[in-house]
Length: 186
Figure (spheres, rainbow, N blue to C red):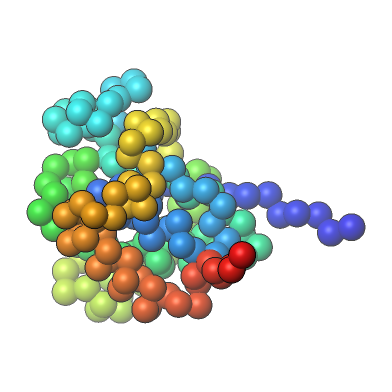
């Protein structure tokens, strides 16, 4: 009997967590995606507190994935393709430390892979400016309020979903079609 590979967790911040979550929910091998807050000092922060830009937390996602189906490196390569890692504390019109680009590594292997990917991106010239993504040790993750979970699926009619999230997801689908979760018909 074949032993199942244990799941792995990646904790990533790349602007609004709704956008990052919407993409990672579509990836084959991803088992769970939770929006939340990490990297700050306030215990059990609320969305309203994080939006004040005083808690130190970033809007982030925790991605639980099957490393037998998708590697941590692949997770990071997708992450870097769906946000601008060259802007400090900003993604599009969203500004503040809560929108920073950051990787919160869970072990030394993840740290080494993250550093390698950032170095490769900087050497590749893919971005006109250097990658400023912070690589920080993981501390504590606080799940966001329930109404923030799977936001784009629950509210596709909202302007932010149509104007910001949907184009990002569409771009992801075109570039990463081989990574999409297979759709099943019932």
